[in-house]
Length: 321
Image (cartoon, rainbow, N blue to C red; front, top):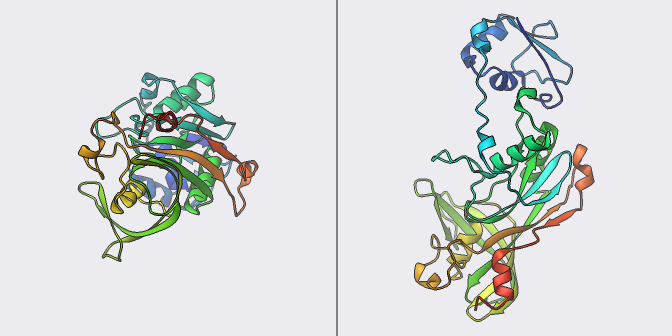
């Protein structure tokens, strides 16, 4: 018999979700069977698959020892650098300033140097994360940024913060603003653009139309011109909807592709600029909670900003014009 004491970071999960993480060698079909046969009990009593666990609960598993063979913990994150630009950190969250070129999660190439692995290594070195002490939780990222885009990424340090942040992002109670440089000068100093975005899953490319399309999703992109300089403009952008490559594709669709963006722009336009990445940065983040935020209520109304945006420095210095 194996027993699990439910800790704070395990609480709130469905029984089956917890067991899938805590006993990865147990096939799901057997998991459900053992619950039906009462070989898995909660606090000594029969339980259901959908039962929500609470801190202090005890799970008893009367199943074969083979499912509890100690698994070697790879801890691949220890091979990632601990180098991080931390904008803000407390006991619940960490705001990291991801630089262009760094991926947030492991890709098909199984690259170890990812933002999440850097964060895990960083927290491990600080003594704030130890996989041996966790049964089902791993500090996690709450939002993503493309490899070649820079900006603020939110990481949750505990399960309660992760649940709250995921809900707030879903309900659009966390505002993100972007800086970008586009080719040309905008017709209006500020505007809200409306389009219809269609994604090609095979190529991971999107196309934006100015009229409704089958399978097209409505997108709204608000921009404000901060400065014009020669054949380029510096914009601040608000995403009123959040779709794949929305800023890059939407601005390109109206004739203003991002500087350095060869996916939605043209290589000839970027020739000689020296820009290998699109000039796009998620530089500002504001928490604007409309509903209860639990342990994160103290963040309401707070704004955080990246201190250095690489292309803005070039723009302000007159290197881009």
